[in-house]
Image (cartoon, rainbow, N blue to C red):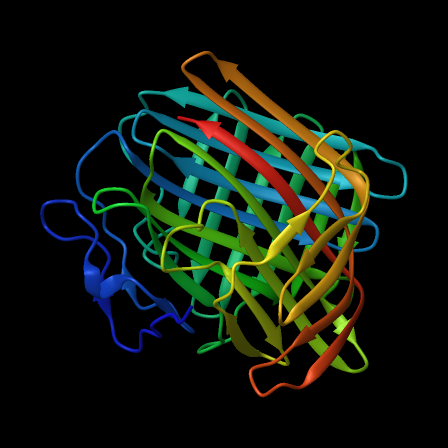
Length: 329
């Protein structure tokens, strides 16, 4: 399967809310105007995740027309200590998530929790504060850096634009229950998931991502599964020393959904990886009509990936995440 590489700016949606056929494809830099039309099925989210060998930190803001969410979490991978803050607001009114990342800050406040994502010309500041947790991180984003943006069309009126980025350096502090931890760029990397789209009611997906170095090469991993099957798009790519290599093949995911802490496998013609979980995180939100289940692991990838020119790169103990998520919303 081949995918169209988009090289010029394009609108994601047509005036009547349908996906723009010219927008279907992928790009190395964000080129889509992701303004959404209509109400009720729109999904907008910003998910940032710092992963080091000792610490996981998540900052998340989302707005889904009828519901808005702010959340943050920190996990000590050595001890298993976890502090999480989260608030849902029903019928939130004003959208607090901008059309694109650099249009304006995204911010949410509720019940003593504040989450803010504040972009500027050189990157973004991630800030979150609530009971037992304060996150203050600076993420550097070099101008013109490559990432993977892709449009997944399920139908003319249901589609998703996502920008996936990895290997993002960060610095700052994460304070859990009064204990501050300094984060330096050499400690680990940030993964960013930026999404705008009009989704179907029931969705189920796999996502895997990682950042690290092996044999002197900086390696970023980005894989998606399930919900791209039957579409002309995939969410699969690798990043080698700053260059994105798109993978248009649907990869094979193998894992035990009765034991998410067992090793996972992701394989294909250009991917042969094993993910070894270190920490398992389960989330369940059930309001009968609206449900969200997430089974997510943090750990390490090892194996081999193949670049566009056929060069093989070893992957050893690259830290990242992997998940199975199902939502009715």
